[in-house]
Image 1 (cartoon, rainbow, N blue to C red):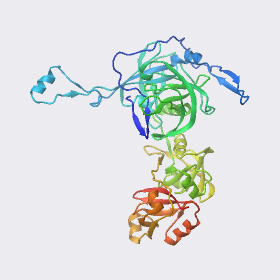
Image 2 (cartoon, rainbow, N blue to C red):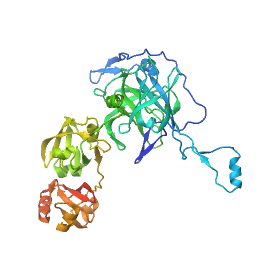
Image 3 (tube, rainbow, N blue to C red):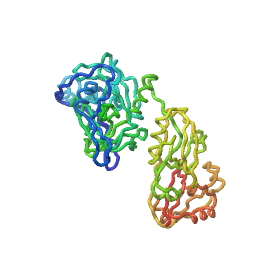
Length: 487
């Protein structure tokens, strides 16, 4: 639908469904040989030997990929619910405006329907189409246009906003289809090609390379995006990303931009994830994600020093939901999850991305760093339903010098009122702790993963610390880790 901008300071994370289109429709002339119905074999790409490594390098045949699979890429036009904020106009007789004005009345406005453009691609010769969920969000009418200029009304079989995948169906047969690949062997630096309808220019082809894999973005931690430098713009949303062999490896979805248009960084949803979502929608009409039941935050250098980690990697557990799979598995605040089923967790966003791709009821093995030791925890995931699989805990971190805290133990009445068994109340704060974001009234629950109930115990733990300490703080209903430099 309309282009959506999400702030990701200082850049803008933009979904790529084109907004309202005015004036005459513009179409790019193209001359292509229609693809045969059904799945075609991958295009044999030419290879050359790299003088630097001596290994074979795949050289793509972009014209052949475009000729063969371009007809399976579709243009999607969407009409949405009327909105007074989107091009409202006066209703009825054009002279009614003047009559109402003369009567001292405010002219009545009639909200106009929203219009948007996007892309998609055919994955089933019987009319099954993949695109982005945001392209058809709030749609009342969806029209699919093929490269042979035929148009079909499409039915939305289902959407999954969490992964931004939608499945459409048109009433047609013997349609050209793309060949689906996999991102498992996709390499950074590999050539890729996008086909879509930027700004309504149908079947526009752009090319580039894979810039990175497994990117987690602020707006959607459930998708390990493929980052590319392929030029994509509003209207490219939902279009395919091809590898050098002509296999679809991703669905173009978002960009980072200061202007709202392409500036060299674009993101695609891995086709492996999209296929799993598509299969669930086709089979059940909905998607069920898995849930672990933890809140996690990033491990920076100060926290890594506090917990004795060699590198600032992993997802730091700041709280565990009671009765959740994480709780039943014995996960604790202060645990650092470094892997799931052998897959490394480097950034905190990697954890929810991996968990969301698992199935409810699946058993996962978690590699955990706990109080300076490696342990393995097994958890059986639950259904996410409407809950977030793993939320990023917000925190304020600033390095400093001394600790600078005035503390007292919790009173029995406070323990009863808050439900907290033990901890130290911050009565005054200054120095390094203040710069790190500790506030008066915070309750210190643990230091470097060790629960504290007395000031003497706190001093003992801090005295053994080297460069920094990590305080587990209860602030209102939230628990967060605050790292403080002491060296």
